[in-house]
Amino acid sequence: MVYIDLWLEAATVIGDRRAFLRLGVAAAAGLALGVGRRADGGSGAGETDVRERRLGNVRQLTFGGQNAEAYFDWTGTRLIFQSTRAPFACDQIFTMRVDGSDVRLVSTGRGRTTCGFFFPDGRRVIYASTHLAGDACPPAPDRSAGYVWPLYAGYDVFAADPDGGRLTRLTHGEGYDAEGAVSPDGTRIVFTSLRDGDLDLYVMDADGRNVRRFTDGAGYDGGAFFSWDGRFIVFRAARPAGAELEEYRALLRQGLVRPRRLEIFVMRADGTGVTQVTRNGAANFAPFMHPDSRRVIFSSNLHDPTGRSFALYLIDTDGSNLERVTWADSFASFPMFSRDGTHLVFSATRQSQSPRDINVFLADWVD
Image (cartoon, rainbow, N blue to C red; front, side, top):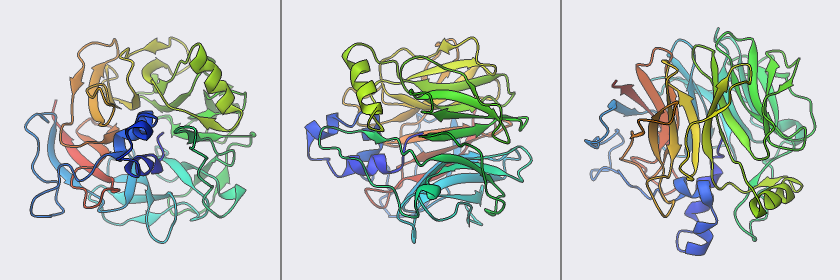
């Protein structure tokens, strides 16, 4: 998970190179100042970069504001996503059809939310929210000493009907619980938690019971998803060492984390067989497995020595056959394949009408 406001923070410091360099992964989205905007000011997907051979019929589903982390339901006909839009001051969870119509609020409208996901039957969803800790958006952290992400202790994972009804709290531990995704059989949820003093991956039953810790390496493990066949879990992780590890632990005690280098990992759905997929030292995040369970799509700034732009990449799970997928944006992330592998949804700055816009796009996937 990457909060939508991260790229907004970057946009406010464009003229300050030192501040920019402190942003790490967050900077990627921040410098998307209308790249890819059509000269006629239109709201369509615009001209496709000829290098985007994997993407066909790219269409824009949201228009304006900050919209991201859009994920398919099991039928491929509906999406759940988070958005900051009037009248809300920070992210809330919505659903919409895959043509962008029939947008519906799911979350309470209180607090801040993130990471929505459907159960396989489409009759329930999950998301993380701070609303039990207060109705207002939680305050931004002090970034005078460098860029950090807040780990709001008020975040818990909830389940609800797609209309927001029958809201049920699933996590009850102290501290940050978020970044949840449901297994294809609907029986388990993988999520990130700070409950044992480090940011690790946990799996719980769909009703919140029987919580098991799956990772224990020092560093931030998060953004996990099950593969469509249910055999694997893909995630991104930071493995700080030396002075970076000391800094990481000191920030955790303040409820903060400073994102730097992130790599992509895959493990079996029972938590065994952890395998590192990327080894490029860049900021790699938002991974999702292709339905063939042999490839991973993810977002990275590995192509940009300044770290200023992020693109989607495809890679085999053994680390081979790295391929850049998007070229038309200065920020593209949060990709997800439909269950049949025919479509890709992602969030990007292409066609931005405002420096702070990020929108949801849908494309046909070309194999």
